[in-house]
Image (cartoon, rainbow, N blue to C red; front, side):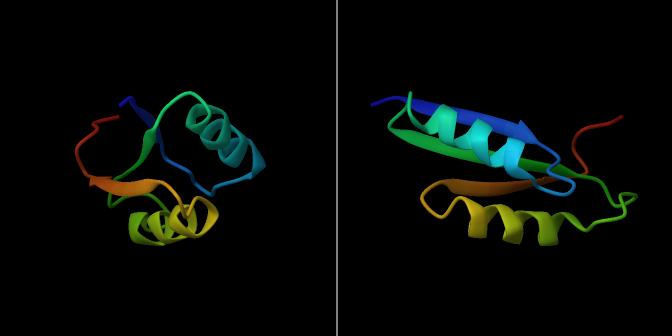
Length: 70
């Protein structure tokens, strides 16, 4: 079984992000989408996670908050 990962801020998610996830999904059995965020960003990370879960319902979407220093 293969597992892939797509990492991004998705601020906001757009058609290019969806295409990237669909492309990645073709090459793996399972795909995890990691949404990175910090408290200083104008769109809350939780909102972006919800958007990505709606756009990519067959993938695992996880939130990585305040872990990626700029």
